[in-house]
Length: 399
Image 1: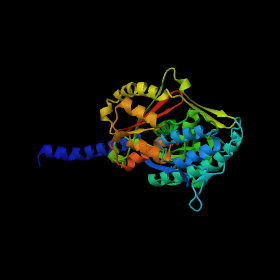
Image 2 (image 1 turned 90 degrees about the vertical axis):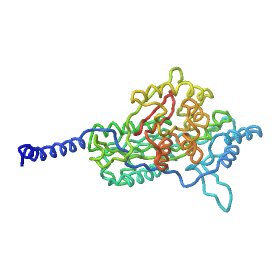
Image 3 (image 1 turned 30 degrees about the horizontal axis):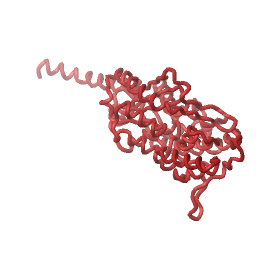
Image 4 (image 1 turned 180 degrees about the vertical axis):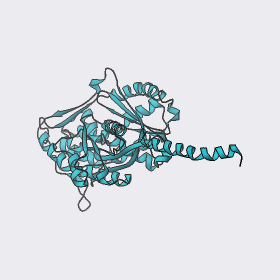
């Protein structure tokens, strides 16, 4: 054996130890959080859009012209069916109906009070949140007691204790789980909640974060024949979505999560001089939304330049993006986003599908689309986009 060979034999164990130590360090090095599981839930009963238009007309239409306007706006919404907690099961072949709202008796009748609507929210939100979260935890492979943080998002109701405490009780989570709520931010709050979850994962390498967005939009049906209010009534529905996040590591194979989807980055942009184009305020008879018909044009003008600048920071261009999860605030808003970003019909098909089958569920909606992308084994990287009052654009990059 030559001296060189003997020297090599002594170095080999040292080199092996160095590699092992590097793998151990990689496991401890913070990296982009891993999406370990996604779960979604909707109320058991759904209603077809033409049936929903009939219900709306029966409740608020004061004349035949108003009935025709309601039917037209509902038909043009891009929604085919919605799941709502207020829907009663069909009996003996009769169409779906509801018994929470009563027909308007006068021009000043606003329907159930905000207090009555909040009571319905409290009865319904926990059930949906638990169902979505249970599925997300099961898909993650974690035990319930391993969840260390809950990040909840909602803008359609409030109560204390809230549905996050319901998650602890009904899913047997640790009594020491840390809770944060992202409240009243609107349709993009699912992405804000993911951002908070990502921060927890990067700050604590032992964290397992349950993000849960839950909305009961149907209880805010408004007694108004104004076109923008009819559009809101035609779009919104109920649902919950949950995501389990865990810290990633720098060396994927060492961690065993080589194929996992990861949250790489988040970004936010408030469009100047746009605060009056969308609002969501608490009224005496539910929460009241305003939607300007100028909103789609603003998105078409503002979205692409901002997205391009954000992606450039990651040395990416729009052509590098494999798939898109765009919150369908409405058919016109989705079309404006697609026009601005120069996307094909195939690229926005998942967003159109969720809008068609479930309606706009506010904050959970973009997470429904993310789940659909995973189901389709969509190409990465993926960009998630959502819009809300501000006008605010929220984005997330998934790799």
